[in-house]
Amino acid sequence: MSEPRPLPVTLGQLQLIVGGLMSGVVALLAVALVVRPPAPHAFAATAARMPWLALLVVAVAGAAVLVIVLGRLLEGRVRAEAVTRDRPEGEYLPGFATWTVVRGALVEGIGLLGVVAYLAVGVGAGLVTAAASFLGLLALFPTAARHEAFVDRVTRPE
Image 1 (cartoon, rainbow, N blue to C red):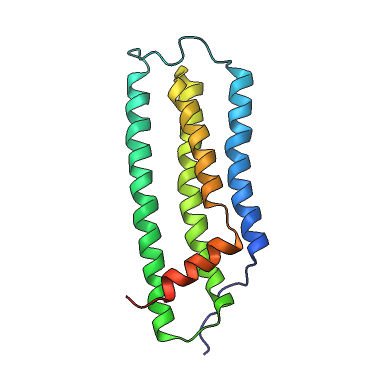
Image 2 (cartoon, one colour):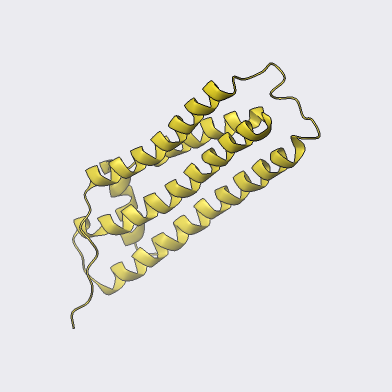
């Protein structure tokens, strides 16, 4: 029985996936702003908002750590495979895709949580969290240069 091969993925497909993650945050944020326009007191810390603020702080910190740790673990796994196989650069794209999508999904989840916090009790920090999530997804957007940098990181000797 032959070894299972990863499904082929192109950089363009990966860009569509990350673009979809970005559009989810933007679409929900737009709906939230229509349903609940920001009030002047949206950034005031009230008793009703404190649990949501605490949840946002913990979730953002946790997601940041997970994005870093999972990124390192996934790079390590691709690096281990690179040591055992001599592969052309294009075959690193599935590993890069996994690395990008997993981290992007975490960032998107935080943005969606921010919008939910805003909708639930009007936490203005939720809007900031959603905007930061969108910017984080922009920073993760896959490009040829980011793919090349990923390949350089996983193939260079330690």
